[in-house]
Amino acid sequence: MLVKNMVSVRYGILLALTTLLYGFGLGGAFGVFEGDIKGHLDAQARQVFEDTYKGDEAKLNKTTDKSWSYFKRAHLHASGLGVIALGLILTLMFLSVDK
Image (cartoon, rainbow, N blue to C red; front, side, top):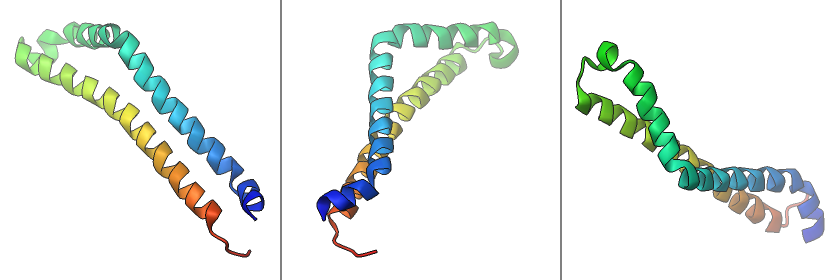
């Protein structure tokens, strides 16, 4: 019965594991390239420093810090969704419900 149920949810398991791999990859990339990413965000913000931020360094720093937190949030959401999806799929797989 368990093998039969596993066949039914194999695509869901594959997608959940892919989501986990994506979240893990984002975390690894952010760890390796954190300085480069933050530097890129700062460089992009500096291009519009006078027009957008009117020379206010605090606003620029707030925006780039917020941008970095959104990057990290993408990693956390991908990891969390993958774990929840895999947990729900495995729970459903162990239920003995006839079609």
